[in-house]
Picture 1 (tube, rainbow, N blue to C red):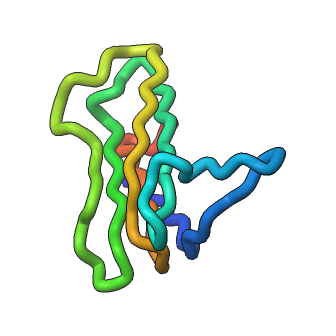
Picture 2: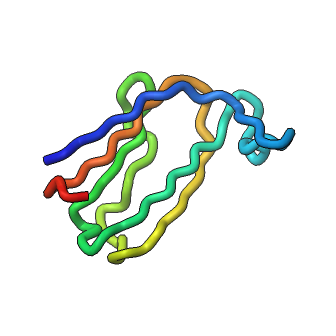
Length: 92
């Protein structure tokens, strides 16, 4: 089982003077997640956790199709988060 984690602190990001979080309320930032599946999407899962370790967003239990790209976005309060993605077989 392969598990990779990324820890980060969210703040409003600016690109060419336009906020990526323009749809979010003040004190919140947009989190965008893009997942590209391989031939076995059922082997993969991911979770976004807040500083307290609570899961605030995660992959669906089923529904990903092979060799597809999925994108999602949500607004979260500025702060520290961890993102972990898991490949049950370790080949992705």
